[in-house]
Image (cartoon, rainbow, N blue to C red; front, side, top):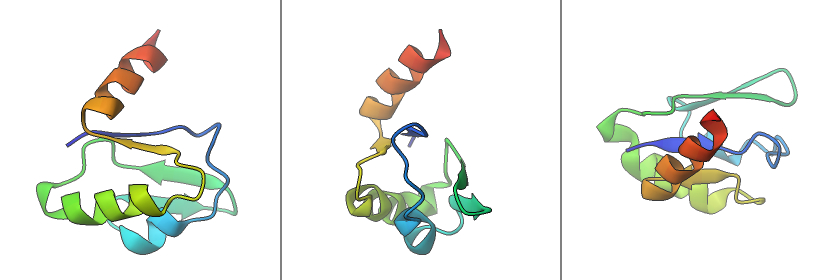
Length: 73
């Protein structure tokens, strides 16, 4: 599983941090750190975190891979 967080869209609501604390971590009030390839045992938590994001800033799976390719340039 791959994930990408659109940090321009992220508003720091931290719902992802509460739902998948081994994958997402908030530093300070707005700086989000995350594991782009989380462990397989975190897949369900990551999917819940993506669904709970109020601004839909988390892309998962193939959508994340496409988003990552666009961001690399």
